[in-house]
Length: 400
Image (tube, rainbow, N blue to C red; front, top):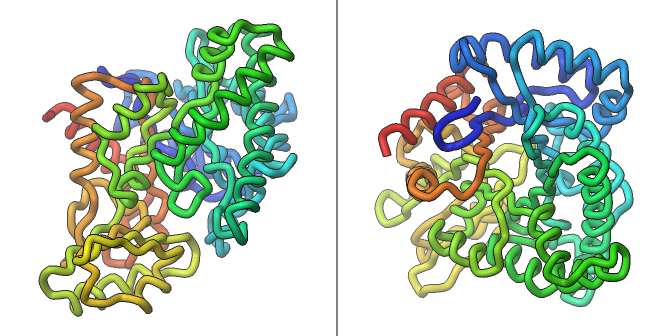
């Protein structure tokens, strides 16, 4: 829905359905209620998640026409797609496979092209649109720096292959589409700093050279084309886990001219071990579930840090030198604490305060997808939970 701070939506990855018919059913079951509560008189925007199998079905003209008709009837519009998880995301063990296939593969490229072709046909006239995607690859798959660099180079070439497709779409339709790359702990692009360094040192030089040769573009024009079509998906939870400050992030982006395709509004778990350390360690064990990755980054008393690929490893290695944990969990936005545990809700407030004063993206997408694996005492019906999340964001923006 359109707000003074941009188009606000939520990501439908909270709804199950790797097959399109299953996901469409979940949307029909939930969206009318959500819209009635949040935007009864105005169009309601949706951040659509389309799995690979669903993308094959939705690419069929009759399926896409059916969906477009339903969207028009419900006064709902789609302007962003979540293209990060390719396959199963519910009722299965996801963990590191959320990156599979990565950008070193043709499968990831083909899937993302399908998503853009779908999005181009769903977008309202005059709007740009974005597809979010993983941070090139999962760095723990590569045994040494040489392998990681080779994977980065291969992934970058596939991103540039996609850029050719986005250029084609714009020439043929006039629609601007952008790939929104999402740094995540333990991705090759682990954080925004990694993303900026890759963008400046690898993507821009390779992309400018390619556009000069293939499209005969002037270097400055080629640079602007890349900046327009390859953007950042700024996930507040991921930035918080990396202890990155919004002011620092935005300054580093501004120095190069990188744009923010969307702000994903999400919250991580935070633990201050200064008091009641053993009690807090016990409390976090209830969040150690088997479905999603929950990377942990610590701040230590000796000014070092530890990075753990999942909560299990962090719990096994916990020691009194560790003063604070940040845990990738995407906990509900409207809850600032969970008993003795805290969230990084304040990082959302800081980021939204900056955005309200000087907007740095047109799109805001709430992304809390862990409802089903949260401890039972904080689970609520999905529709009610989504409405509460969105209302909290609207109120926060209004009160800032």
